[in-house]
Image 1 (cartoon, rainbow, N blue to C red):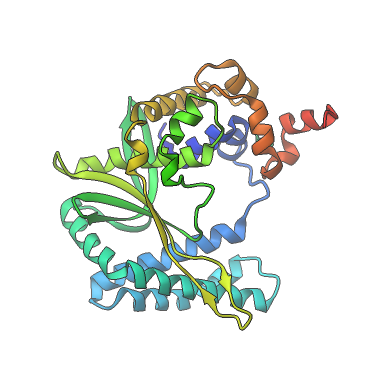
Image 2: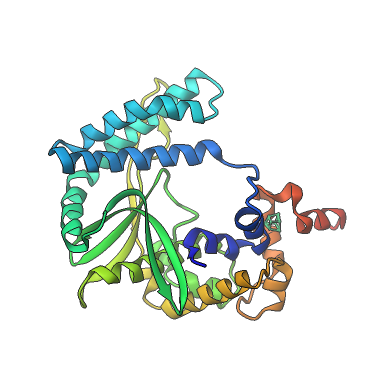
Length: 312
Ligand code: SF4
């Protein structure tokens, strides 16, 4: 069965969490508003590009129109506690769109047009699936659009925040080896590298030898509010190719290791992290870094067992 980069990232963080989320399909204490807001931004930006391609209008205009038409249904989905929160969020969305189209809008539209010619497949999502096979393991990653950029074919994943703790900094160039071979615990950052590896390989199907392929994370919002309700937004982007330079084999081996564990139904984090040799860390690191923020902690036997040990 095909495994998505998001699923593998969850397994890397905690196999039990993977079981709760992807096998038992429990909801947990979700970040429903946050997920809905991110989805809204992806949708309006992609609609802006699709409109521009079909009608020759400015993508920024199409995106703002899409925001107006989708806003009512978004408000019904989201759990706002006041009108003030609702209008604040609208200001965030508008500022995010302005910042995004000001910074990359027309450039990326040109790149999208060139990618459409090259790939002969839909290149604007939101939520396009790129699939490939790595060491006989079927994997996929979700991106929002594909563009030609310089000499490369680049898949872009949009997000609504600067990914400070999730997407690696340039100084984290060996993050995959540090997590998988040296016992550091950074599953979210390594998860973005796994996504980058899958995108790189999947995009290779559309290009001739010598053309690079890459994943880029692009943040479109920063929550800087003025007291009068104005919102300042910025963009930030991280191209992920540099994180693969030394780590392709390490990432590929980790994908296979996780896929084999998942296929065997092995979700016991103590077994996976303390008994198996692939990762040099321990379950203690999961407890220290993940359990207190975990949406499944209330029903998790490992978390409950640790609480009744009273060893704080
Ligand atoms: S509470 Fe801890 S052990 Fe349980 S699923 Fe969450 S991260 Fe894993």
